[in-house]
Image (cartoon, helix red, strand yellow):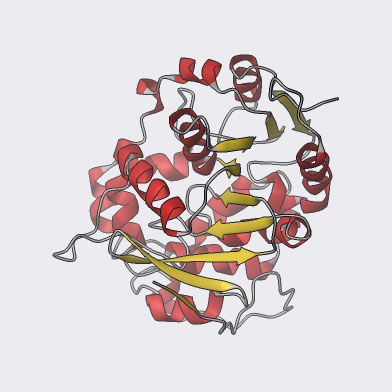
Length: 327
């Protein structure tokens, strides 16, 4: 069911000084990066693939112990956890995956080959199937942005299966979509993006996600660009974005989340308001919130050591009988 692929000719985290230029057609987004090319460049030594809903889903499974599943956000990939995963795998079984339609995984497709729309019901079916396929029972979840929404929604739907929950700049409350995502609500953009989406737009979007764009390494930026230009991804995003209406989500159900919860947030998050950190902490009983000065929407990628210290402390705490971490 799952197979390992260890090839990687552009390893994430490499600090290569000079990257070869992309062809003009690629930079303009006129051409797409083939899935096989992305697989060759961005799989890791621990990479595996499992068939989920008709698609080969890329994931990395490392370490041993209690399972800890990390779920990335919109247009990111499992690589966003590189700075914290290795250390956490010393004491846990750490599983990271590329959500469709992103990363090496790419879009889910129907039996006829049509790209599926990834709305919340589709993500629910997907993550439930993924957990079942890997035989994951009681689990600790860490989710960022869209992955945070998928994580807390999973905790609500599977109350006895989640041991701990970490939400990092999580989606869920009503908000205006970031301009770089909201563009896809335009029919003209949805029609044109699969055939023409210049690289500078993606560069600007990724820099905007960081609190300090000077922390963004060139190989990491290239990875984001190539994944966004991946075969089928822009079409899938065009189908997905119009479904991202958080106004209809029932966030009152967060009051029923009876698991130890940590809310982490970048104070310079330009994509989801930092004020939402307090909203999560107020609704989830006993949740603790930490705000990171100077960091943006993906603090665990921008400054992994800073975030790792808080993750280790939270995951190491013993639980009281009520399920709340002991202080």
